[in-house]
Length: 306
Image (cartoon, rainbow, N blue to C red; front, side, top):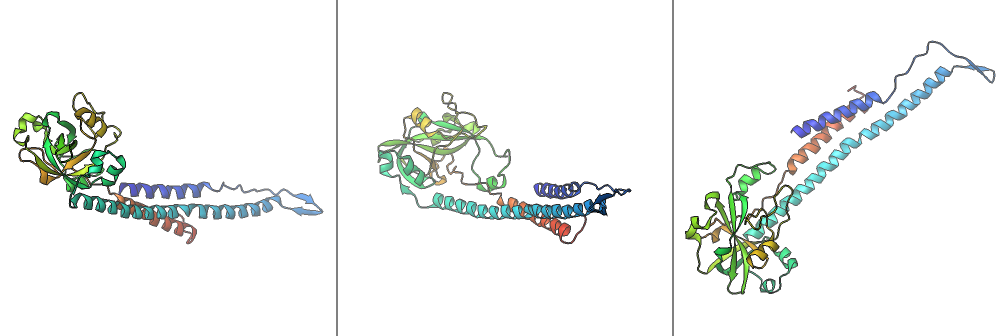
């Protein structure tokens, strides 16, 4: 709403300023200067006044159509945001359908011959694996807060959130049927449960079935610290670096909530909430279009002095 008020005030000032500064003040001559031209006396001042009047009308026409660009442009931007909102809603729906679909077995060809292109096509797809965890090589991505889609949708765009702070526990997982190790984000633990000895009940050594959402590597975002590999403090998913440290393949899945082991990290930490503020932009641009259209009509069609 504040952005809409600012935009309206700016447009009004543009109209007022441009209108008031377009024409210079004309000087009224009190004396007439005569000039003999082909035997006739002409009045240069009256001739120049007529010329100035024509120029004024021409400038007024140029100004009229130039300022019409403001409502036309804002209407176009509002329509563009409508299309952007439809695209974003479709993307969110597609991601949700992938993360809730029936899981598939992790493709054998992907494991035998690591292919980034194949991984790209499977991002957010639910897969299932069978094997055992190697708890001796846990990695920690922090700080993290537990995933709450409803809260995250409300807080989208804020500089800070009110959630508690902890970490996601990344553990190498040896797939006994595939003969390789992958990386599994077992889930969230609060700050006081990051150390493994504080959650020994969840450090199972038996073979288990895990269903997870396949994820890709992350690029470091601005203002996000670099990963501290030596200190085991990770701030974003760098699959190549994590694979080098643990000896696993650079294949990463987020364990779903149903794969949570009692006493262990809480699964279901896949964030699929995307920022969707397009309705605010639509209201702003269409509101600005309506206001500037009315001012243009009142000024140039009805002749109301703004």
